[in-house]
Image (cartoon, rainbow, N blue to C red):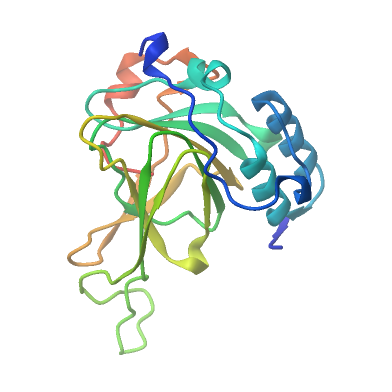
Length: 232
């Protein structure tokens, strides 16, 4: 596949539209989560995918808690990934739930494309350069230096961001101490492992990408408890 670039009922609150741009000029506009999923399936039905069109689809969907709250499973100790759709093996669409102060490790995306949209609250994204390679031409090792921050932004409800490994590494966190956040993520192609990085040394370790729930159903508690607290 070639991807190219061009809790309770009141716990989930509708958010205002903070997206930018002329709504009427967007292509692939969708009104519901179901329409978004159908549009994504259509976008990924061939081996040539326009990632800009995928971003347009994600951006045009306006968050509606009545549509996504069944997928939003929170854990009080860490953020959760909740699978919404497997995209016929070409992409994964998932809802991530971030309690107050929850965040991911610094991580890569295993050569995949990632589009993230905030459905509730706010999320902070911090981007980093890849660790530098040692100067002795040994490309299997990396120097041990603190990762360099290259950008930081705050995403509000209905805003999106895009990243792939050519753009660097990133960390996502809910910096609020009083409000939870919810986000919608698309990864293509799907991946089951990625690398997480130590900020001080740049060292990487492999981490499994697991789901707290699938299709709105709770998963086995034993599986949930074996998940590393900071992987993405």
